[in-house]
Length: 226
Image 1 (tube, helix red, strand yellow):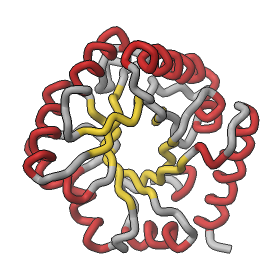
Image 2 (cartoon, helix red, strand yellow):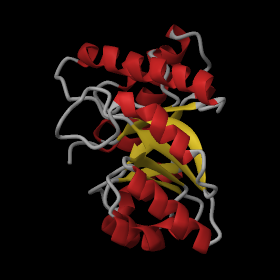
Image 3 (cartoon, one colour):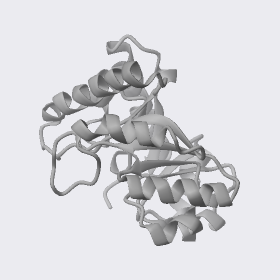
């Protein structure tokens, strides 16, 4: 058995367990394999084991990998997006998880319109108020969502967060719960379905699932240390 197959089995088992603990089906949770810094040959091995969703942080790395890999792969951008990279990246990606400012949202909407695209997006919320992270402060999320609703070339999936890192995964639980609660409040106030919660990474994804994650972003737990 390959290492990647073995790790995928472990991760899928943990997804099932965490989903059951939260009273949900594992089918409600998507695994996004974070492939930044890993070679295309390693990504191909994961694809051969049935993994289709891949996430990249850096635009340049994504531009290099997409032509090398099967067209069936679905690429998600999970890192901060610079305006001068938007036009290059939009034709290649399925979803942006990192809409972290109204200026970026406006630019993505404008260029997507020029390219005749409609881009699924997540609103990135800095739920732990970490100065090292991008994202809207929670208090600004309602106004940001109101703004996004008026951008016709964006499809709002929900909210995304990257809590401040803690060696103890349990310390992230309140942040994940806060994002879920914020999403529920915004569903009521906006009338939007907002089905998605993009949260949880290699060290804390079971807790994120227990608190309502619908898509987890897992890299090193699948591919090994960078």
